[in-house]
Every structure is written in structure tokens, then in C-alpha cells.
Length: 223
Image (cartoon, rainbow, N blue to C red; front, side, top):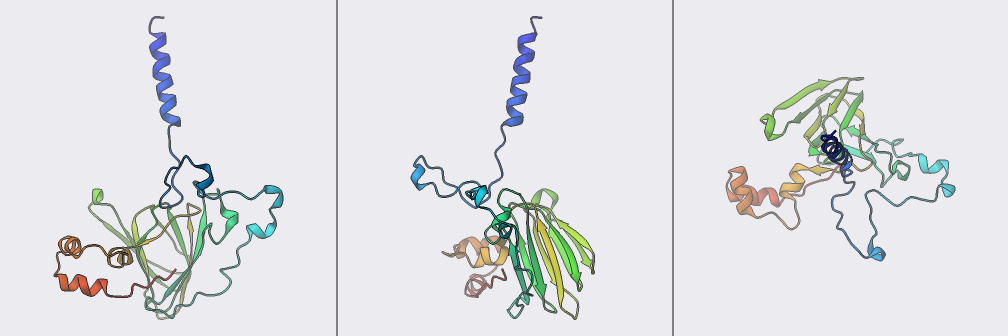
């Protein structure tokens, strides 16, 4: 019986550890404040009075019209995240429509807060994702055809390229109401203010003229 208190202590610590888990962030930054009057963001969004909700709050019609692919990337991503679709708030899911012209690309990007599962509705897509440094930045890639489904793990860099001669269409589901988006080229070479050329020349092992050229480009956002 003399070991009973220690057993209780171990159990209490294990229980506390099990419940000491922070919820995943739903925005890029959330600076703490003690001033309740200035607290405008929470981990998600403030909720409408349930008695004021209607069926329209749970309807999104933005996927009815094809996205305009007349842009440098030849693709358009239409998102149904919580900012566009308020009914998703607190539900932990979102969607996107991806339209591709022939040769269109959804460039390498990452969703820091969500896993993505993609289904091809029309066309042929070359897709892939790259693992973290821990797994030696291994590329996993496949060619997808109509009806195929592919999953991109949370936080990993991934892409989709239309390798067919016709228009392509896909839909994606994501495991967060606000999965976030970081387009790699835009973030690295289009940052405002710009990342120091000294940093980029050493990181990419290229001449400063190359960095200057890339930073001078207009980095299109297809979202």
C-alpha cells in the first residue's frame, strides 16, 4: 500500500500530459493580449448566434463557374475556406476547385495547417510531394487520370501539373477550415520586404544577378 501514492502521482502526470495539448493554429499569428477590447481574433472566428443562422450559411456556390486560367501559370484555384464559406467555422474541413489549361501548373506550395486529398474530375495531372529533410527530401509523384485520388500530407511541399492536351479539373478536400497557403517561389523571391540577397545567394548557391532577376519578377498568385 505504500506504493499507492506514487501510483496515483504517475497516473495524475499521465492524465495531465494527455490533456496538455494545444489546438492547432487557424491563422498565421495570434499575439496574446490581456486587453479584451482589442482581442479581435481567436483560434478560428467568432460565432454567429445559432438562432440567427440559416441554410444559406452552409451553402457555397463558388464552384459553379470554372476558374479563369488565362494567367502566367495557366491555372486557377478557387478556395472554399472559412473566409469564403462561413459555415465551415469550427468544423475542421474545407475544399478547393482547381482548373487547369493545357500545361497549367499549380506551383510548389504547402498548406501548413492541413492535409489535402485531391480527386481528378477531368484531364491528366502530374502530381507530387516532397518529404522533409528527415526523409532526405524524397519526391513521391504519380500521373493521375479521371477518377484518381491522391493525398498530400500536411505541411509538405506539393504541386499539380496538367500534362494533357486538354482542360483539366480537380477538387481538393483539406483537413482544416483554414489550411493556409505558402507558394514557395512567391514566399522566397517575392517576400515584402525582400529577403537579403546575401541570404538567397548562399542558400541557393547562385550568383547575385540570378537572385536580383528572380526578385524582380512578378510572382503571380493563382488563388
